[in-house]
Image (cartoon, rainbow, N blue to C red; front, side, top):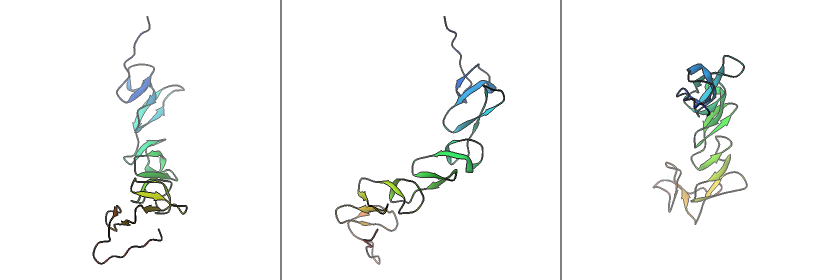
Amino acid sequence: MKEIIVCHVSCSHCNGTKQNECVECHTGFFLSLISANAGFCLPCAEECRTCTGFDSNQCTGCYEGKTTVDGTCHCCHASCETCHGPGSGQCDSCYADATKMANGHCHCNNGKVRDPWTFGCVDRCPFGYTANHDS
């Protein structure tokens, strides 16, 4: 009969029950090896979903609405659902109310315009604003 090991709470897989016997970590933690095959699971920086170390410039994955640029998480432009950079022309996908254009911008569907405050697609611009249909 195979023995069941209950890992330390910080480990997703382990060689034993102690905190320093982790082999793999949960999301938001990275493995700091103390031997060839085990170590501690230490927390990533707050803005990193996954990382290779403590610092915010060691992010390998970010939370929704952000992207990794040179190991640091940056917010996507508010018009982008997902992105490969923080600019408005760096969208990989758009929200359901918009379509991604060849230039990487998200253009509102059905003749709607982008609200300058919420970045959502609305029927008309707020008072004092005019639509820019170039992006």
